[in-house]
Length: 256
Image (cartoon, rainbow, N blue to C red; front, side):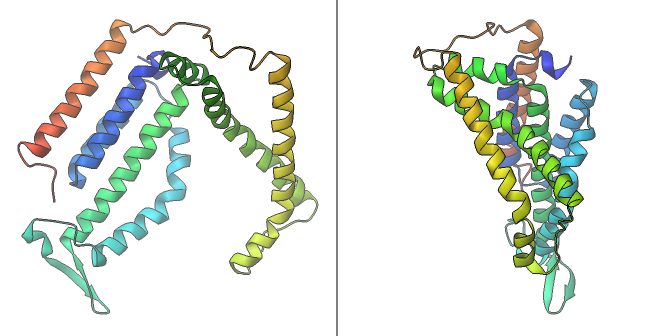
């Protein structure tokens, strides 16, 4: 079943279940298993994975640095056997527990990025509006949140267009330290901010012309209804979360 066909409330429940599970587990092995299960489910659902790699790629260096730092600096483990020293560099001792802590941080980051990617790529803005209408959120808050989310790719495309236009005019990003890079980005940020202000002004005019604010309630184009497939996915997610909590708090697994 494709993710786009799932009820948005089920996707939100699965997303929350994943977030709870990854934070109660401190063992990188169990979090890696959760990540593998999530990736397998996304592949089985026919989710395009190309965009996921583009989100993970900029984080690779950060994740390597996290592992390196935690190996020599972290003591957030409870099992005494994990105090074993793997090697020493310049007087700094890298421990097995520190390595596992770093790997667990990396597994958590990958889980959060993967779950966020799956939710955003499969959830239209209209579905989020319908959910907020069901919980009786203020209509202005619903419009504010959904408009901000929908403008992210729009502004990213505008930024790319401005960068290409400025490069064609000879603008280059300097490598002379942080200050030089900030100064070199001024020709890009000024038109980007100006474009965003004009876009917001045009949006305000369009919303006023369409009667925005005439009523204090918001109507939805369609009603949200749970189907048998939605209930099945929800039950599997709840069962998986209960299993993780049972392993963690009853049997003591998933702890380093």
